[in-house]
Length: 392
Image (cartoon, rainbow, N blue to C red; front, side, top):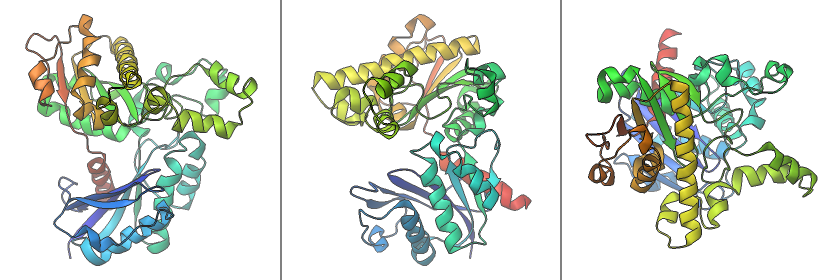
């Protein structure tokens, strides 16, 4: 049977998976799907396959990521995977200061990654639950952790420092940045679309339920909007983005909120959901005539434009802007409103191309290129896992 690599991207409410032939550098998945709605109304779907999704069976709302990962692995082995799984690659959000590249997971690595769970509570525990589930079923199977933070370790010290006493930086309190797997994929796609400009000054806007931006020059991260945790920067679906630390002190001291409740507000009750009072989903807000929905969208775009302008300062200019991820790829309104706020940079959109979600949406007169490119974090993980197992 053909050897394959399984890629798992496990989050707080979903398990995304993809199966790639092990020998072709992860270029084309033979199977891709997800389990969504974990904890509420879980449902299984296959995105790229002719297989019958119903064969996976019913999913209980009480089932968690570890149990579902184990069941998914069993289902893939028995029913669907067109070959023998020789490695599993995982998206792991936080690699801390220790991991600047993909690594094979062992007990020591797993322990180090578990210590980082407080820095990414919506992601890290679930990433690691999947690793444990695979290890319990197949302890001999190579598992490769690929980190969202790794891409940003090319940044210089000024981009990573907080203005805190140096003892904090020595303890690892630094700006790490996230969505690095997405930025790595987009960086690899730029030469096809920008030619020589691909090595220039590019801002990539990864806009989804989680959202961030990254300044890239010469294919490397120069600066990014997220920092120590995935709370920083842009307005997100449920996360607040950049916040005066004094607000947290006020919540603790004056409002008497326990730390767990503060965390819940910042990670789960804020962002588009908090401002609109309606939904964290941009599609729902765009379809609403409630003025609160409109205000949430405008705040999202206002903060995104401010952040993008700041990243231009870090780059010393701008050659291209790339929109990616769920909102970036699918919301013409958001792209238009962000770019309208930045027309002083010489950014101009072709309204018809933008409405059609074309790959290139900049007008002929625009001083910089504006692109819409789909991202593929799973492909980056498959490539990395393949390289590691071939070099073992």
